[in-house]
Amino acid sequence: MSRPLSLARLLAEPGLLALLGQLRQAATGPQPERALVRQLAELTGGGAEIRASWGEVVAAAGVQEGEGQPFPLAHGRRQVGRLTLWAPPEWTALGPLAAEYALLSRLQSAAAGAARRRVGERTLDALLSGQGDPAALGDEAYVVAVAALAQDFGSGASARAAQAHALDVLAGAGEGYLVGSGRRGLCTVQGDGTAGDRATGERALWLWPAADVQREAAELYAALTESTGQPVRLRVGRSTHRPEDAARALAEAPAYFATGPVHATPTKPGRVAAGLGYVRHIAALRPTLPWYAIGGIDLGNVQAVLDAGATRIAVVRAVLDADDCAAAAHALREALMVNG
Image (cartoon, rainbow, N blue to C red; front, side):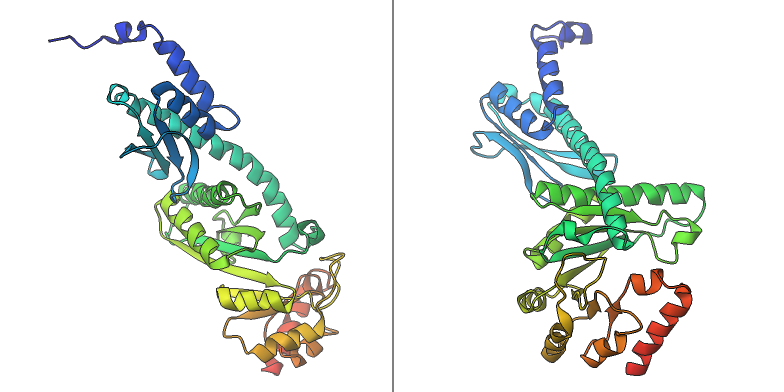
């Protein structure tokens, strides 16, 4: 009966350190998942695949015949994906080691994603505050998704730190879904658990070009719940600028949709106003979904927007640029209430 190798003898095995170096180099490169599965496929003569936590293939290489060896990839309690190996029997023992490098590759991608997300956060925060330039988004209709964790983290410094970390993980999971599925989008986190933030709540937001809202929302929800291992509340809204956009929104049934811009507005420079006629078009459809008129609405024209059939509005400058923000918000609310 052969004796097991000691650690010293194992490390002295010819080619072992070279093998570890190759795997480490692949897992820490610019495209770590792709490089790693290629390395594993070439090494074993079989195949390898890495999937994201929501099931989408991130990278695959080699021959995938028969039933492969699955290895869940977890970082603490957070599921980050799965490695599957198709390899000859003599390579079976490589599986657990390969899984560690696969986990490293997923964390490496997550770190790169976090750096990209910081840039996206600044852009999206500026757009949400009315300071950014929406013209940079182009003329496409966009989806806005908002998610919050259902867990009550409690109060205190440690609870706020735990919530801030959980929100960052949530945002990263959503950003990873967008990048992994080939969608360009923006992401940010609002609120960090401090007392001043609790009025609006702590949440993650994503914005991306609309394609198939129902499918994208379902995939995003799966990515968020599977990556965080926690219950998540998700709401998805859609922007519309033309009647065909509205038709798609009604078919896709998001949580709400926006209609506009009703009037030309500096917050959407270069975008042609949809006009009151578009508001009348939407109102005539009698949608069962909540919808909001948006774009260039203020105290001077809000009544015309309401007369066109709108029952909800969204404003930025009408409040933020007012001498008395609270009074402006109250006056707009009164106009809505009087209109019924």
